[in-house]
Image (cartoon, rainbow, N blue to C red):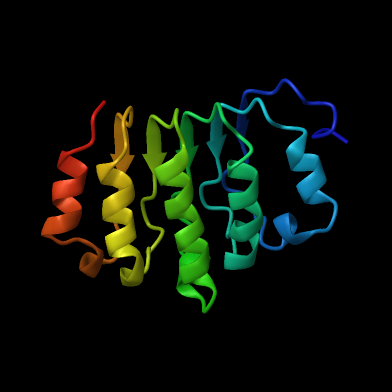
Amino acid sequence: QLLQSSRRLQRLDLSNNTLSGFFSHPDVPSLLSNLSCISSLALANVTLSAKDFLVVSKWLAQLPGLEDFDLHDNPFCFTSDSGVEAAERLIDFIGSSNRLASLNLSRTWLPNKIRSSLSTALANRTGLTSLNLSYNNDQLFDAHLLSSIAKIKS
């Protein structure tokens, strides 16, 4: 009911709550669609599963004004069998979001398989002024990814 009455909400911080399975509930996608004015979204340390993130990724696509996205401390999203698909949806969002200025992916353990697509998404970004990839898989980083980060135009 709180989410239904919050159509003009601009900042939403659900961090440090155990939300595993929450986003997979049948009623949640329609509730999230009411929150289209969000400019800042924090889902840090909410124990998202890959299935949850697939729902979240559809919601992210409906947030044209999202400027700040914090997903840190959610290693479960991308380490399961369906984690690569969830990571690919995240990369699609990074590549297509026009207003995203701050992105925190610290301790998400992004899979190595998405390194190339992450590099491409970052190389094509404009306006990103803050990017946190700390405490991730060491094998994620290579010269191509670092070169892409260096090309980000703020």
